[in-house]
Image (tube, rainbow, N blue to C red; front, side, top):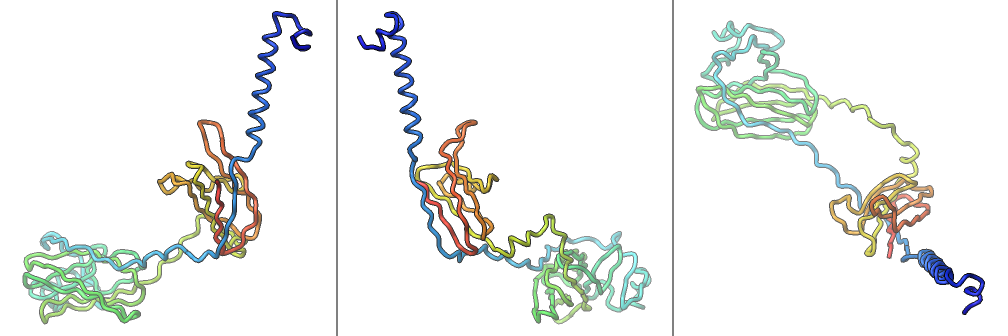
Length: 291
């Protein structure tokens, strides 16, 4: 019998051996955890890719909605800065082109038909169109500033008037003309002003603009479903694109040391945690390979 057992009572010796074995198991487990699990390697290259430029907004014209003029007449008509009562204009004394026998194109605002309006880009304007014959008609939008012409073909009915909504995006003076066959309407003039910039919801980080940015990508074939923190703040996840593919990309400020922390969650526990601190240069793309 060993000295350890002789130093203790006979009955307690097996229990002491069990305690000794448990202690050895704990020490072995701690030594295994102390061994690094995998390696971390950084690579870098010029950051040449950039976010695609969003497509420029285009001027939109809605489909025409027919309506019966009876009961929907405007209150008055504004021509050349002069306001006329609509009922007085139907006789043709002030508006020779007003009537069902002619091609008509008007803008409508607050129960007034008018031929000139000023608005901001992206706002909508209501158009009123009428043709004396059933069939196709052509609406032309002429941009003086851009020297461009936009064209829409409209199906119209002579028994009705048609309401359309135009949303111009280009700025400057625009002309609108409706024609059917060889008969044109009177021209409308639309002065479109640039939309005032909206107040920024967050303050501009002047220092970040000066030092630039770097792109970081974390990749791993061994670890899936991980989160990424930068300086203790959550930045990304390899599931942020909807796929658990072991890859997460994000952008950080350059010119200073950042601490990238990668970890997994098992319930409330954090596992496979590793921290990687380094400085990043602007306009460089870095990849952290975890194996």
